[in-house]
Length: 350
Length: 107
Image (cartoon, rainbow over all chains, first blue to last red; front, top):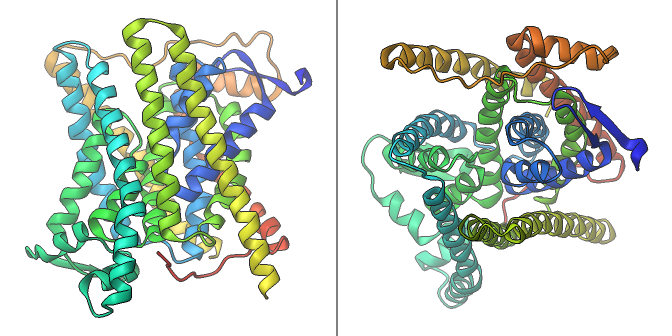
């Protein structure tokens, strides 16, 4: 394996090229499939394998930017992107992100806020994950039942469109201007509601120092009422733009290892294409279920990291890394296997 | 989707990625002069280029001497590689029968 070790001149370390491609492939699959950047996987992974944290974040952002191009292209082909909503998301999220990061800077003056941020992160991930599981195991069977007994009911209509109660209620708040998003099948929603949602997700991104793709996708599904596949594609536009911005600024600050990002992107581009293609074969609720499971494990990893901060036991730090990497690897494998089996089924049925 | 269709959004992404850091830099400079705090965020790291050659030397030299050029090169390399790899992977997937077209959105 030593033959695959390459010298990374900027980071000043030797690193296994195959490992970089594997990390890239794994995060690419997840990024293309869930509409997220996957920074929460790559950054700790690179750090665990010997990258300085400053280089890990910057290199990761450069990779996300590159991989998102392919994923956006693929989702565009499948009609999964609402550009109008995506553009609104980018502009509003940036404003929210600035407010969030300014809040953190102000709080930092009062003391260490890392602890609080991790609790918020953990709370958000676990709540979101649990709600998605609740939606899949409780709300979905109920709405399917009512669809069977009362075909003309509101819930049956919502279910067929993939719309839920929260988004339907939000759609009724018709404060002008009311806008429509034909690409997403949204006939009328107050622009203020949309702006507030993106401002909030942007604020959380800035506050917690994360890319935000994992919040935008569920927000688009549960609060605005987008079909899951369109939410994934549209979320990826925000990821693409913010990562492009991050890539440039981090590189200008000398925090991107170009060679590592380049090699990682080879795997990530392939992974992103495979992940995006898999969306075609898996129903929206299936994607949401997998996403819910993944973020619950991510919350577990953050909780384990929190134990490390409290106790100082390095065991918990290693465990956090193992949980995170294990989840990412398992989830990528599940998506690829599903892609293989479903595409084979489709071929056989032709 | 053809490359030309992707060109417009990509151009906007690149324009934003180049413009926002400049605005951010201006804002930070103004903030620093107002408060008297100079927030040094750049990594004061110089690479020893004496033992390097070829691409490694080129990257390290640019990193040491011109960070803005380094940032431009990094962003462009990622954009070009991302687009080319997407194009190549698409061809391979098509050959494997995994071609995609517009889908119906099933929940």
